[in-house]
Length: 179
Image (tube, rainbow, N blue to C red):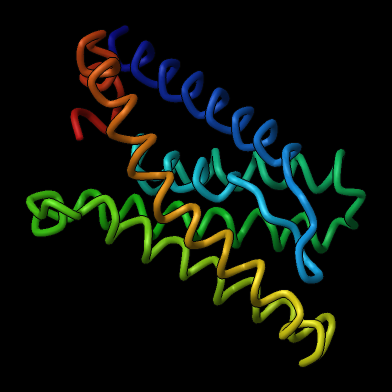
């Protein structure tokens, strides 16, 4: 019975994080051929809180749902978004679980940086393949701004919500455990 409760809590938390990614993506503004928003910070936060797989799934799902229903993208772009956002949160989540990163004072920043730069690399590859060099170059400045904002914001969000999650005992009940 306890294992089922843990799995249910993981599913609920992943759903909440996916919804947060979707909602935060709604608040964005165009810049230099792309859009700037804080959705990447919430994707990184998903990896930090939920671990690489569950956090990656939440980040990918929230972003893919936005692209499918709010962004007007085709199925291929939705799939690419899911994979790239999953990868961003996965890299961040994996580093957050690494013992040597956990012990570092700036471990959350390092994990966020690695995750954000993973996404930038994948997005630039997608842009190059779909839009050519000019399309990739035009999207690069906004991508770097998004990455920088996410690298700053995700650790701040993480350290802001962590005490409440610890105090409520939620982290101990989840399959990723205390982080």
